[in-house]
Amino acid sequence: MISLRMAVAVALQDAGEATRAVELAHGLRERTPDGWDLDVTFLSHGSRFEPMIRRAGFGITHCAPRLEGRSIAHDLQWDPPEIVGSAALARELVEGERKALEALRPDVVLHGFWPFGNIAARLLGIRTMCFLPIPLDPASVAGGLLRDLPDVVPVLPRLPRPVRETIVRMVPAGVKTGLGAFTQRRLSEAIAACGWPGEPPRTIFEMLRADLTLVNDLPEFYADCVVPGHMAITGPLFAPGAPGDGPAALDPALRAVLTAGDDVPVIFCTMGSSGTKDAFLEAVRAVAGTAGDPWNAVILASPSVCPIEEARAQVAERPGVVITDAFVPAPTVNALADLVVGHGGQGTVQTALAAGTPIIGVAMQVEQQINLDHVAARGAGIRIPARRWRAPVIREAVKTVLGTPSYRRRAGDLAASIRSGDGKGAAAERMWRHLRATFGPPR
Image: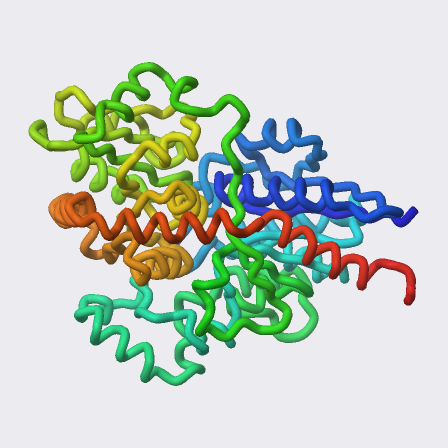
């Protein structure tokens, strides 16, 4: 029997990353080859998703520093394009995970968009595997991944989109990969202080580099994009609905809004757990701020994004609008909605597309912009640039999508693509192939 110890280091403050990590661990456990024994432990700095991890049968090791677990933006003190607010906090995170890994002594670390775990593992000489929403690699960024200027680039995103796309095509590869959106100066300073041998990594590409990287997205989105050999695009990955989920299990008030009739469109407004309060409130004003709107709306005010009282203050008094901060079964709500308005997080996007529901979204970061651009390029939604994410603009986009049947049809086409694959199974098979080659007996 070959025993394999795996530590999972992910952004447990983020609902999408936490659920994807659990699904990957599930897939690995379900497909454990004969003659192998797999032990999985999650690292945590504090997270409301810890009960979900324990219910799934996985252990948890707590790391310093202890964080609130409210959201990535809050806990890391986000200061875009820097993902961490200070070099001191970044060093605490790396050192805390290094100490935990020294005690656990895993054979491999699986991490998501969480460079602290990657760096801690590499400082200890532990092998790494990674899962990401997009192929974050210089070859991919230079070879077709980036189709539009990132919103975080100053001034230029104000140009018309065709002009921006022309600029991106003309920009040399080295300039694209050297954009400030990919450079992490504070984390680089922290890595040096942790004793990194030689020149410390400076870009997010280097800080996430693993022996194997899985991209949990539709392969068709990358048909004309360079994908390096250490990466594998294995298909969408998100938590399925729980047994018993369905319209009948919904809160009666929520069910009434979602099933008012075929002639009453329904908008589902959500920013997941990684949106910003300002962006969320603009969306709320757009979908529920006018008493005479001819649609119903379900608004999820995640406590990690916005207090429900502030969201309620933006909502016009009228029937057909429900605002909640309680858990809602996203697959069920998406399937009953006609449109999702939110951000470009992979979990939000893929759950909507799996239900065949079009999306209007805004990006908080480059990855979310690329997610939404993939959707928009296939006619299944609209990405509104961050600088234009205002209630009047969002409302016009809502009217366009609800009044144009092709958006629903195109979203349905992408839903069929998602149903035809098995993202969890493909990811597990690819990881086990790598693990057997790395840790198995010599052939």
